[in-house]
Image (cartoon, rainbow, N blue to C red; front, side):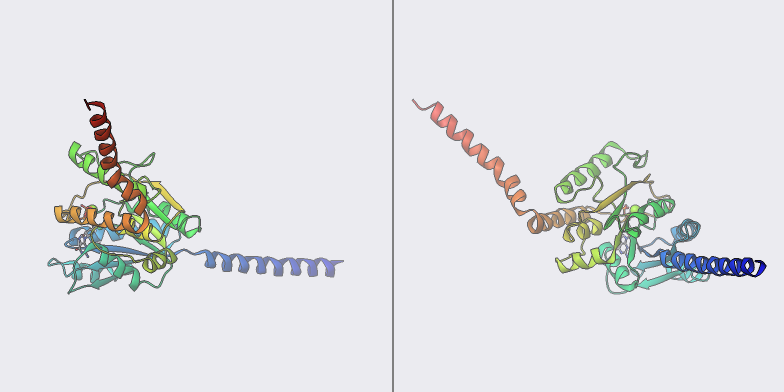
Length: 291
Ligand SMILES: Nc1nc2c(ncn2[C@@H]2O[C@H](COP(=O)(O)OP(=O)(O)O)[C@@H](O)[C@H]2O)c(=O)[nH]1
Ligand SMILES: [Mg+2]
């Protein structure tokens, strides 16, 4: 009996061990590996805080994150600061000396990564790193192809200091993009995607120009599984915005390209319908006032 008991408890111990090792194995399999791409131009003052907050959040959540800073030869101390941070954190600098531009910098970061889950965010702390896990998990769980840190869904908001015209500008730009993508904040710069979403966008003629690379990827890839998680967008404390009028004009050009590629009939209707209505009304008026 005693032998049986000890054999049974031996078997139980063994199966317990197996269960434990299976649990460890499956936990290991479930570790989320993510590359966080941050394009930078003159953001040296923001990087230490950004780095500390990103890694605090991801480590607490058990996410294996690497940070790729894609800098266009900023004439500040970006390179020294990243070298310093890389002693403590998994952070790498990709320096571009012959190119400028936010969207192309982000795509370069994606290309430098060998991971499947990709995140993009600003360096200026406008996108709270504490929301990273919420933005990453829908893609990591394969519930979404594209996940957005959204200012315009319930619970999300923009900075309290935004004036009327800034709000209007952002809203109008957002409304213009809405027919292209089923999301409340399609212009967000804080997003996560699976590598296959990027590949599908590239197959469909991704054009990495201007500022709105998230919108470009989402529309070119024809994403239907999109998640939005609320964030509180805060204005930068350090450095200056690089968003210029030229970038806003480039956005209109980008929209035109996207409408031609994905919603040509919608575009035609929007452009020609008012003219058609005008013609019909004119015909009625001419007929009505005919002597
Ligand atoms: N590599 C690179 N990054 C850029 C460029 N322009 C802007 N960025 C970065 O892109 C992010 C968004 O730009 P930002 O100036 O904050 O634009 P805003 O949030 O629209 O005011 C920031 O991290 C910038 O440093 C550029 O030409 N090259
Ligand atoms: Mg910003």
